[in-house]
Length: 280
Image (cartoon, rainbow, N blue to C red; front, side):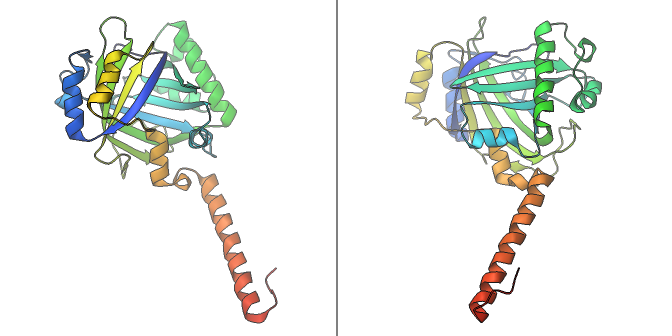
């Protein structure tokens, strides 16, 4: 993944499609955009994307999305293969009202454990000399330290990406086979053990643009009768797995709450039987 197609600031709209509609959308989109060079030679024009999501024991960033906070962020480490020589990308994805802001920096794999342990990065930890990337990784580590975040979930999918030539002002992506499973270590393996398929057989379509909403985006939505929806891969994956599967803290709290409920039910049963509560 040599070229960086990052849109640092953009708007994005998401839709869920059947595979049949996704293929028709592909035919529509190719009149306006060019296929991403990474997917051009791959089966179904798609390349694999893997992300390790980082969150606190209380799942702070997850709950910010669930609660609909207008200003929120997610921390993730993106990777594209198993090779120990390939970089990983520390990414901050922010939502500020309706805008998406992204920062990221390419990091050497042998530096990841050091950074996740709470140390701030040095330029030697990065694969790029771009100061913006160092600033991005520094901010990532500051946020990680602030919420005491650790690896929580591995999310992967096959991405078909289309982009405008030259200015990168418009992108269309279609993500298939979105999978998620809990992951508490920075192992960066593309292999899954027992994932959930977050959106089943559906395809996640994202329309991404940096300026005004393109007229042909509007026509695409009209022609295919698309309905905008939320499709947060990490968050929806956690909902399917259950929050407690990612966090010993939440698991212990759930057990404590269940014991409290059990004691309450036992107290109620004994009160109903004897008229007197005998449980302290």
